[in-house]
Length: 497
Ligand code: ADP
Ligand code: ZN
Ligand code: MG
Image (cartoon, rainbow, N blue to C red; front, top):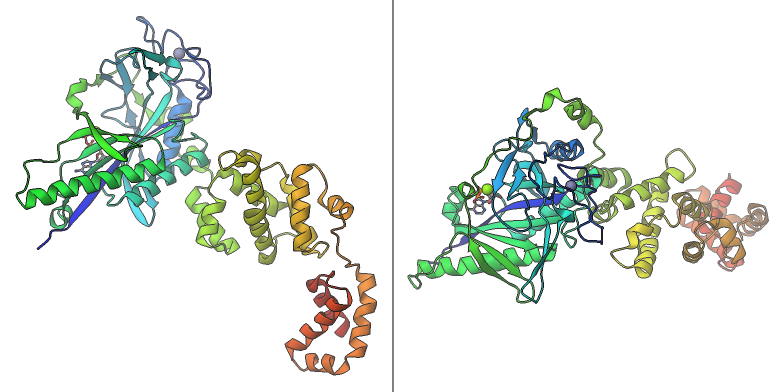
């Protein structure tokens, strides 16, 4: 009988927060600063006699994230020193939150699974070390003391895909909340995965196996691959143990991820919390959150933006998007905002679904595609408003009013990208994309067709819908395909009445 092993995963995710200044001093928090060691001061360099001052903006960011995931905001919080030596931590300790995190609980739906959150707390980031080839290390302290949010999930994830879906959803949330960019590639978000395997019976009973913690996962692909690798490695050991074929076992340790080899490797034995000799930070006052006006929970809650998952559901319901389209349109706050600004620019109180569909199609299959081709996958989004939403809406209006056909609209869009401030109607006119849909000119032709086909008109009046199609076909023929069938339909209906 073969035993089935179930993996269990819990995530610890760090995210740098986008604030003007660092966590405990007034140095700039600028992840894009290219000069090393310029955003530093005696406080973040850990010089004796200096005092940390709390950054309330960073705390607000964490409270917003906590409210968005439905967590409980602490009444009371304090800060703790986590002591260890490393050149990237100039004080010899990191100021973190141990016993009293800002947020406890909450959950996020990821890939159809509810992932429950243990806690979210705030701490300071370390400096950046570079280990060069001359057996020397370089340290850039610009990052030392940058506000760092840490979110810990419960061990409730059972496959790599859900872990990735959770990390992506969290990234999206932070972006929508405007609290961080959370680019994994830039180290703004860092995922650590705790992984264990146990028999199905034990897993169901909540008896998990010994876990390993995989660090340095700097892309979603790495998260997925590292977890899959670690599950396979641990499962193999468990199977061998069951067969009495090995003395090896899974040891609790920290493992790294070797992207090139596609393997995790042992880094060090896992330290436990008592190794850090946590104790309350004496230089920062303990805090009763309810007594601080900036942290008023109801105000923060009211001011939360529409959250990505709410927005996604609304796009499906309101605009009949497919799940895939809704995911694409909410993939960045910039794109969803751009989309909604276009709709706001379409004439008419609320655009018809048909019109919305046109916007969805021209945006997703044409405009975004063209932008990606020109600026690349990574940078296209910064150019999303190159064609203003108002001009995009004007283009859609040209299509709706039958002034350009779809080919003409695509070509006009291409030209609009080269001349972003240009009026689409002017561009279409100058390039001969405007269809011959002058109602006056068409009306004569319509009457001509009606007079020439009395029986067809009678058929239509008796309820034969295809008869109308025939009449429209005649019109298309007579205009050599240059007229808009919707426009012809409208004119025929008016004339027949
Ligand atoms: P530690 O004290 O070793 O840091 P914690 O209990 O604080 O462990 O949990 C750290 C992370 O590891 C959390 O995300 C948690 O969900 C996860 N975790 C805990 N136990 C296991 C396990 N047996 N298997 C997988 N993940 C686990
Ligand atoms: Zn500083
Ligand atoms: Mg822990």
